[in-house]
Image 1 (cartoon, helix red, strand yellow):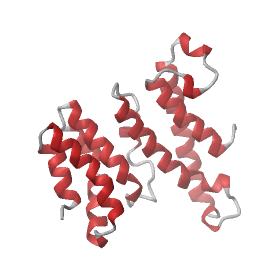
Image 2 (cartoon, one colour; image 1 turned 90 degrees about the vertical axis):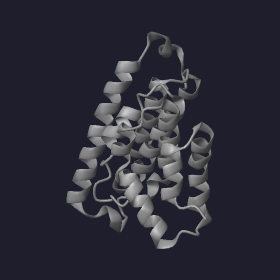
Image 3 (cartoon, rainbow, N blue to C red; image 1 turned 135 degrees about the vertical axis):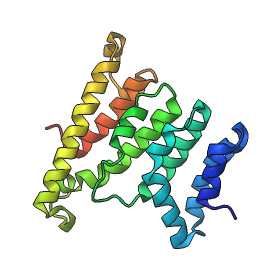
Image 4 (spheres, rainbow, N blue to C red; image 1 turned 180 degrees about the vertical axis):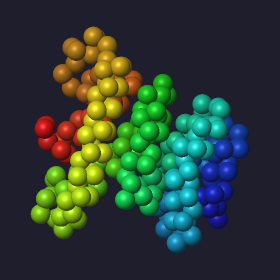
Length: 191
Protein backbone atom coordinates (compact mmCIF):
# COMPACT_ATOMS: atom_id res chain seq x y z
CA UNK A 1 0.00 0.00 0.00
CA UNK A 2 1.29 3.45 -0.91
CA UNK A 3 1.93 6.09 1.71
CA UNK A 4 1.52 9.86 1.40
CA UNK A 5 5.28 10.18 1.00
CA UNK A 6 5.18 7.64 -1.85
CA UNK A 7 2.40 9.54 -3.60
CA UNK A 8 4.15 12.90 -3.25
CA UNK A 9 7.38 11.40 -4.56
CA UNK A 10 5.45 10.33 -7.67
CA UNK A 11 3.78 13.76 -7.94
CA UNK A 12 7.16 15.50 -7.77
CA UNK A 13 9.23 13.05 -9.83
CA UNK A 14 6.87 10.98 -12.00
CA UNK A 15 5.77 11.52 -15.58
CA UNK A 16 2.66 13.54 -16.44
CA UNK A 17 0.18 10.68 -16.17
CA UNK A 18 1.58 9.04 -13.05
CA UNK A 19 1.90 12.42 -11.32
CA UNK A 20 -1.73 13.24 -12.12
CA UNK A 21 -2.92 9.84 -10.92
CA UNK A 22 -0.92 10.12 -7.69
CA UNK A 23 -2.44 13.56 -7.01
CA UNK A 24 -5.92 12.05 -7.30
CA UNK A 25 -4.93 9.06 -5.16
CA UNK A 26 -4.12 11.35 -2.22
CA UNK A 27 -7.84 11.89 -1.62
CA UNK A 28 -8.50 8.15 -1.72
CA UNK A 29 -5.72 7.49 0.77
CA UNK A 30 -6.96 10.16 3.18
CA UNK A 31 -10.46 8.77 3.25
CA UNK A 32 -9.44 5.11 3.29
CA UNK A 33 -8.60 5.47 7.02
CA UNK A 34 -5.86 2.86 6.76
CA UNK A 35 -3.05 5.22 7.69
CA UNK A 36 -3.31 5.62 11.44
CA UNK A 37 -1.13 8.06 13.34
CA UNK A 38 1.84 7.62 10.99
CA UNK A 39 -0.22 8.82 8.04
CA UNK A 40 -1.30 11.89 9.98
CA UNK A 41 2.30 12.71 10.88
CA UNK A 42 3.26 12.39 7.19
CA UNK A 43 0.44 14.75 6.23
CA UNK A 44 1.49 17.40 8.77
CA UNK A 45 5.05 17.32 7.49
CA UNK A 46 3.98 17.56 3.83
CA UNK A 47 1.47 20.39 4.39
CA UNK A 48 3.74 22.40 6.68
CA UNK A 49 6.51 22.43 4.04
CA UNK A 50 4.28 22.75 0.98
CA UNK A 51 5.13 26.36 0.11
CA UNK A 52 8.86 25.58 0.10
CA UNK A 53 8.41 22.46 -2.01
CA UNK A 54 6.17 24.32 -4.45
CA UNK A 55 8.85 26.96 -5.08
CA UNK A 56 11.14 24.27 -6.48
CA UNK A 57 8.61 22.83 -8.94
CA UNK A 58 9.25 24.05 -12.48
CA UNK A 59 6.60 22.31 -14.60
CA UNK A 60 3.12 23.87 -14.45
CA UNK A 61 1.37 20.49 -14.68
CA UNK A 62 3.39 19.27 -11.71
CA UNK A 63 2.55 22.47 -9.77
CA UNK A 64 -1.12 21.83 -10.47
CA UNK A 65 -0.94 18.22 -9.28
CA UNK A 66 0.98 19.21 -6.15
CA UNK A 67 -1.38 22.03 -5.15
CA UNK A 68 -4.48 19.95 -5.82
CA UNK A 69 -3.12 17.15 -3.63
CA UNK A 70 -2.18 19.58 -0.84
CA UNK A 71 -5.63 21.20 -0.91
CA UNK A 72 -7.29 17.83 -0.31
CA UNK A 73 -5.33 17.21 2.89
CA UNK A 74 -4.74 20.82 4.00
CA UNK A 75 -7.42 20.61 6.70
CA UNK A 76 -5.22 18.12 8.58
CA UNK A 77 -2.38 20.57 9.29
CA UNK A 78 -1.49 21.06 12.93
CA UNK A 79 -1.16 24.83 12.99
CA UNK A 80 -4.38 25.78 14.77
CA UNK A 81 -2.43 28.33 16.81
CA UNK A 82 -1.16 29.94 13.58
CA UNK A 83 -3.93 29.47 10.99
CA UNK A 84 -2.44 32.00 8.58
CA UNK A 85 0.92 30.20 8.31
CA UNK A 86 0.46 29.54 4.57
CA UNK A 87 -1.54 32.66 3.67
CA UNK A 88 1.31 34.31 1.72
CA UNK A 89 1.48 31.19 -0.45
CA UNK A 90 -2.32 31.04 -0.80
CA UNK A 91 -2.43 34.70 -1.87
CA UNK A 92 0.18 33.83 -4.49
CA UNK A 93 -1.77 30.77 -5.68
CA UNK A 94 -5.09 32.60 -5.99
CA UNK A 95 -3.43 34.86 -8.59
CA UNK A 96 -2.23 31.92 -10.70
CA UNK A 97 -3.42 31.68 -14.30
CA UNK A 98 -4.29 27.98 -13.84
CA UNK A 99 -7.89 27.59 -12.66
CA UNK A 100 -7.28 24.29 -10.84
CA UNK A 101 -4.54 25.91 -8.78
CA UNK A 102 -6.79 28.89 -7.97
CA UNK A 103 -9.66 26.60 -7.00
CA UNK A 104 -7.33 24.70 -4.69
CA UNK A 105 -6.32 27.99 -3.06
CA UNK A 106 -10.01 28.89 -2.61
CA UNK A 107 -10.58 25.50 -0.95
CA UNK A 108 -7.67 26.07 1.46
CA UNK A 109 -8.81 29.61 2.34
CA UNK A 110 -12.32 28.32 3.01
CA UNK A 111 -10.88 25.66 5.28
CA UNK A 112 -9.36 28.35 7.50
CA UNK A 113 -12.46 30.54 7.64
CA UNK A 114 -14.34 28.14 9.92
CA UNK A 115 -11.90 28.25 12.85
CA UNK A 116 -11.10 31.93 12.26
CA UNK A 117 -14.74 33.03 12.37
CA UNK A 118 -16.19 30.69 15.01
CA UNK A 119 -16.09 33.45 17.66
CA UNK A 120 -18.19 35.67 15.39
CA UNK A 121 -20.66 33.03 14.25
CA UNK A 122 -21.03 31.34 17.67
CA UNK A 123 -20.00 33.75 20.45
CA UNK A 124 -21.62 31.50 23.07
CA UNK A 125 -19.23 28.65 22.22
CA UNK A 126 -16.50 27.98 24.80
CA UNK A 127 -14.01 27.88 21.90
CA UNK A 128 -14.86 31.58 21.42
CA UNK A 129 -14.29 32.78 24.98
CA UNK A 130 -10.58 33.69 24.90
CA UNK A 131 -10.42 37.43 24.19
CA UNK A 132 -6.72 37.48 23.23
CA UNK A 133 -7.14 34.64 20.76
CA UNK A 134 -10.24 36.33 19.34
CA UNK A 135 -8.31 39.58 18.85
CA UNK A 136 -5.64 37.63 16.98
CA UNK A 137 -8.33 35.99 14.82
CA UNK A 138 -9.88 39.38 14.11
CA UNK A 139 -6.51 40.77 13.03
CA UNK A 140 -5.90 37.80 10.73
CA UNK A 141 -9.38 38.23 9.22
CA UNK A 142 -8.83 41.97 8.76
CA UNK A 143 -5.45 41.43 7.09
CA UNK A 144 -6.90 38.68 4.91
CA UNK A 145 -9.77 40.91 3.82
CA UNK A 146 -7.44 43.81 3.03
CA UNK A 147 -5.17 41.63 0.89
CA UNK A 148 -8.14 40.08 -0.93
CA UNK A 149 -9.62 43.53 -1.61
CA UNK A 150 -6.26 44.69 -2.97
CA UNK A 151 -6.11 41.65 -5.26
CA UNK A 152 -9.74 42.09 -6.34
CA UNK A 153 -8.95 45.67 -7.33
CA UNK A 154 -5.82 44.50 -9.16
CA UNK A 155 -7.71 41.93 -11.26
CA UNK A 156 -10.99 43.83 -11.71
CA UNK A 157 -12.03 44.67 -15.27
CA UNK A 158 -14.88 47.08 -16.10
CA UNK A 159 -16.68 44.27 -17.94
CA UNK A 160 -17.24 42.53 -14.57
CA UNK A 161 -19.56 45.35 -13.46
CA UNK A 162 -22.40 43.95 -15.56
CA UNK A 163 -22.53 40.69 -13.58
CA UNK A 164 -24.95 40.49 -10.68
CA UNK A 165 -23.83 37.10 -9.36
CA UNK A 166 -20.35 35.74 -8.77
CA UNK A 167 -21.21 32.52 -10.58
CA UNK A 168 -21.80 34.58 -13.73
CA UNK A 169 -18.37 36.22 -13.69
CA UNK A 170 -15.98 34.69 -16.24
CA UNK A 171 -13.50 32.26 -14.76
CA UNK A 172 -10.30 33.96 -13.65
CA UNK A 173 -8.40 35.43 -10.74
CA UNK A 174 -11.08 38.02 -9.97
CA UNK A 175 -13.79 35.39 -9.63
CA UNK A 176 -11.63 33.19 -7.37
CA UNK A 177 -10.87 36.16 -5.13
CA UNK A 178 -14.55 37.12 -5.00
CA UNK A 179 -15.48 33.57 -3.96
CA UNK A 180 -13.25 33.86 -0.89
CA UNK A 181 -14.34 37.44 -0.12
CA UNK A 182 -18.00 36.46 -0.29
CA UNK A 183 -17.51 33.57 2.09
CA UNK A 184 -15.53 35.83 4.42
CA UNK A 185 -18.33 38.41 4.42
CA UNK A 186 -20.94 35.71 4.95
CA UNK A 187 -19.07 34.26 7.95
CA UNK A 188 -18.19 37.64 9.48
CA UNK A 189 -21.13 39.77 8.51
CA UNK A 190 -20.77 42.92 6.45
CA UNK A 191 -18.86 45.01 9.00
